[in-house]
Image (cartoon, rainbow, N blue to C red):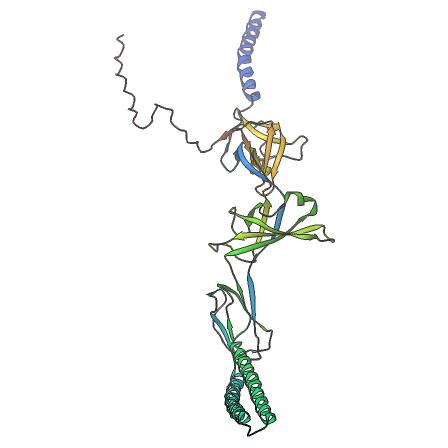
Length: 397
């Protein structure tokens, strides 16, 4: 091959190489350019808005709900149970019959007592007649004064025997009445502790009757917190089995003695239950509302308290950023905490369920829109709709 042809071939190769370089550079730049990260969609379960909330602070209480008025009905006589009239959970009225105990022997004693009273009354009548007759004879001088006094003594003895017989009759009637167990007040039978046919002794428990219209929580608080407690202060309750529903009560009394073993003071909180929604025996957690404030707050779980200072993950300009905050008042029962600085009311922060989202992640928040009141004179009632603008004529070319 001649020198001229080789030179021309090299020239062609150089030109082809130069033409391929821009394409390679574009492919390399496209490969090195990072792909845009997709936004994470957050809903109401993932975020919470910083807004003013009423926080309450005070000693936390826990205990079991009990009826303020309860009575255990017990047998007062010995015998077999003939009938248990009412069942557990049944409502009863004051004086209503609950149970009957066998009273055959007591009825025999009652009959004997009635007979003894009749005999004593007849004896007293005879003694009175004898006394009156002897009084007339004594006044006439037929008998001595001593004979008249003996007649008086006989009448006094007959009177005493009648009184004793009447007392025995009253006791026999009372014993027969004790075989009938009756409700001491209007309430509900919470326990049935015997059955028909059982042989009971005096003191054997048969029923427990409670008044469910008013309950009481017995709880203990540290003696160091006594300065925040006094009768009449309101107490907020959450009761197991009722979800987030809250109840209110008031401190009824405070035990004047401190438990030396625990350093705790026993307090009693009255909880009205007029609608009988609550049941005795349920566990309850309460908080004495000794301090109330309305401050910007979020759930405690939305704050990373392990950091120093504590931080929250805030959504700003479509991305997640970590912001240090200053904490204030804490509501232990509602599990809310005040944010004094670092965020503003209206800011959106991540809940604990979305806490694994990294800082800087693009997010899209979808929250229900807040209803806005129409401005005066704009879209309000009685305001006519704006007139439609006339259609524009096409511009001639």
